[in-house]
Amino acid sequence: LDAQQQLYAVNGLLELRAGRAASAISAFERAKAITPSAAQVDACRCAAVFAAAVQEGVPPARREALLGQGESELRNVGKDQVTALNMLGVGWWMLRNDPKAPEATDGRGATKASRGSNALGQFERAITADAKDVRAYYNKAAVLEAIMAEAAAKASVPLPVFRGAQNE
View 1 (tube, rainbow, N blue to C red):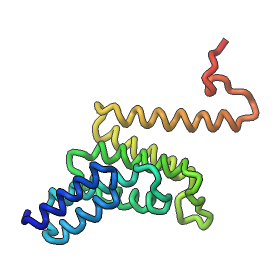
View 2 (tube, helix red, strand yellow; view 1 turned 45 degrees about the horizontal axis):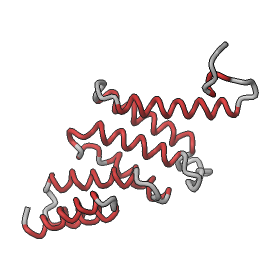
View 3 (spheres, rainbow, N blue to C red; view 1 turned 90 degrees about the vertical axis):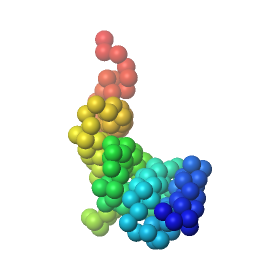
View 4 (spheres, rainbow, N blue to C red; view 1 turned 135 degrees about the vertical axis):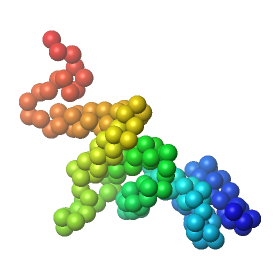
């Protein structure tokens, strides 16, 4: 890496560490523009995309775009694929539960149900990629528990098992 590219990369890392993932993405993209074949910079930029996708306060449309970008760039994360898949799953779940996220009515965009399915699908992919990594199991269990709690809340027949009550 040349000096200017190193400065952009360091700036991106500092921005990422400070929790400013969008600024980090921009810095890594400037570094990548200098030498498009720089794999290190590309991996860092991908990490920034995944970090931005799960950051609190990201507008729903931006989060959905980041998740799509992250899914298309999974090949660039190398050994961090399981982490990236978990982050994608968490991001889709955050988008599903965001009250500001618009429901697709035209049949083309993501709906609340499809966002939940996307989250579960990413956790399944993470489990398939590394069955010994427990993060995806915990994430999947939390999502399934939330889905069951929602179903129990809507049920017309009491379902005490899903509400945490003990069977008697």
